[in-house]
Length: 324
Ligand code: 13P
Ligand code: SF4
Image 1 (cartoon, helix red, strand yellow):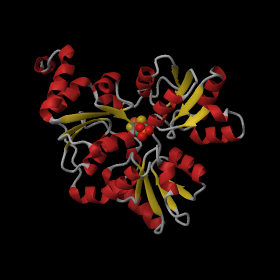
Image 2 (cartoon, rainbow, N blue to C red; image 1 turned 180 degrees about the vertical axis):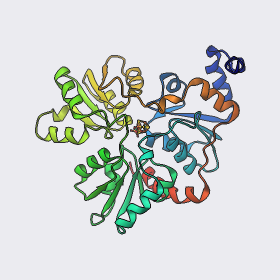
Image 3 (cartoon, helix red, strand yellow; image 1 turned 45 degrees about the vertical axis):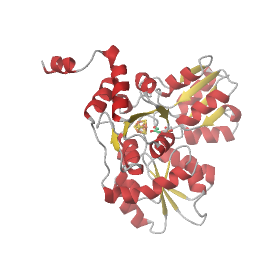
Image 4 (tube, rainbow, N blue to C red; image 1 turned 90 degrees about the horizontal axis):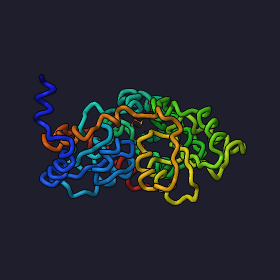
């Protein structure tokens, strides 16, 4: 009965897209979608991108309302950089297992153990954790952010240990790693990748730095066990850029499968093979066209970071936006 009433309140699916576009105009809204969103959401969005690109779009928009089709920490970041705008997320339960691996009190305790260290937080963290950090970074600019810190400084890197180990190897810095991982990327392990290299010898390998295989892949590249010129460790946006420029015809993609929609759409003549069909982030998939419609109709669910936290989290985020 309740389900029937809810159905009556919504326009038929075929009209939803038109209604969303009309509401978007009425609200002076923009729709930002992460590369892992379902195809229907990506196709309706004004911008599709990675965490860094979407934060930049949020920072420069003149829209009054930002609907963030992604996960909660991304909407929080938009709210921090645009405190005067209404930032909405269509489902408040869209969280992140990686961001959940550390809270502000745990970070304060870690800082007490290393009082002179600089804290670099991956953007996949809550606003409270960002407020306790010196720098924020994304997978696109993590290496450059760490390189911008004076070499004599010790670094606490959180929460992703695979990305942290990758940055440590790339920069040769002394970095303490928080033992956090993303439940989707941790499963993309070295065995999976090695098996695929045998199966697809002509393919290029695009690997997200959150993957459990990243550190091993770097060693295997150095030992000549996997081809150096065919293995690329990239953020989701880096993958889309690389696929366009590369002359390769086949790519194995080690990240959440949502990115395949954009890769195929932008490169119809090329073949993209997911490293694992089951690399699916259930949080990213919580956002549906129906929820997006309801979000714009009812201006729900607003994500607003309290001022005293936002004011402290803004500086590390601004550092992140400034370093590419
Ligand atoms: P990107 O910044 O590469 O889009 O990654 C975000 C993310 O959540 C990866 O799991
Ligand atoms: Fe978080 Fe992993 Fe989902 Fe990315 S894929 S949003 S890191 S749970």
